[in-house]
Length: 335
Image (cartoon, rainbow, N blue to C red; front, side):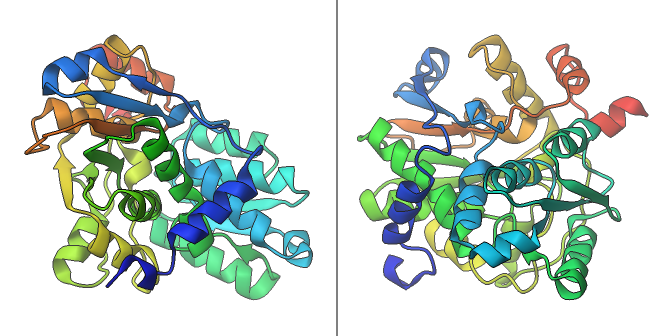
């Protein structure tokens, strides 16, 4: 399947960039001296955790809200979230005079729930998984007329996330490898579509945790599958991709060159490196690119590498625990 045959094209991403300009930050791109020395090639860090709401999710949520009709915004928007999409949608909805309802499972950390409430959104805690939270979203759409803005499987959301890929190519024109955090695939699909359209030879690699890697399992099975969700330092990468996935499964299957899995120990090492060497405080999901390089899991690096760091919404008790040598999730710390 060619790039033009996918539901999100370069033209869609460029239109999204124009639409959201002035509503999101163009985040910094900096050289990592430590990772450059480790890899023997230039390594650049896209500091997307400096985004207004702390993660890339604001790009897709803002683009999606701006594409809605006025009457749809007036009805209110709703989504399931592991935290960062909910925060982004709450921010984007409020900025456009709408109200968001965010459905989350009991696995979502309290600091993320509290921040979503602070932004004026209605919060519903439902079940033990993203899939159970999504069932409540479907009910609210069906019974209350709310408008769903999915966390990843939506062309407008994917196009918004893809604007990050446009910036990466501008920031590092000679990039050879792009490492992208991977969960439901909204970021990976959008970035890959943008990068591959502009630089077809660039390798785009998704990076995620071993525990409940839904996209990896689904691509291996040939179609979307359910996976069990586990506590993880990379909690923002949890959740399924949806059995009726219409956008991101095919795009990730066709556009990603590889998917790398990381252990909790490796993710913790990435967080510690980000803090100790790069002076950046990021959650486990944002540190997976660094972790993959430290673990030697990215093979055949023959040119400049770009990493996306995204997610500063970490529980600081958990962060201190990891920085001090712990390799376990917040639930395991509490236990």
